[in-house]
Amino acid sequence: LREVMAQYRYLGYLTGQGEQKAFLSKGQDIYIIHLGETLDGQFQVASITPTTVKILAAQSNVETTIWLKAESSGEPS
Image (cartoon, rainbow, N blue to C red; front, side):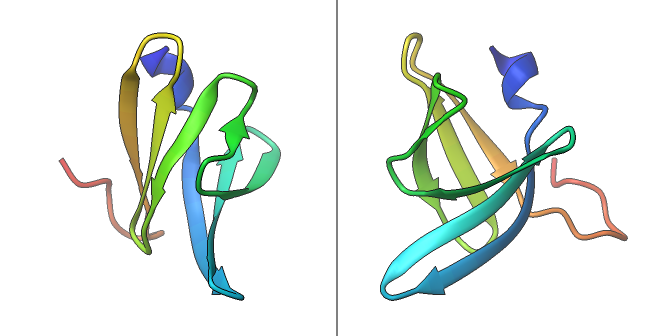
């Protein structure tokens, strides 16, 4: 599951009408997600901040944090 989770990239963040939304990509697909939404039928969006998205694999309670990635810098360690 962690390998599948690692395929997502955090592209951006938006707050509108009191709701936080994040833009994720996986390959050529773009997802606009909100808190509590199910992603790809297997991951639940656990939190959204301007710099991170946490997703949870509901079947196994595996959680990962996806960091907003600046074009010129690497991901935080």
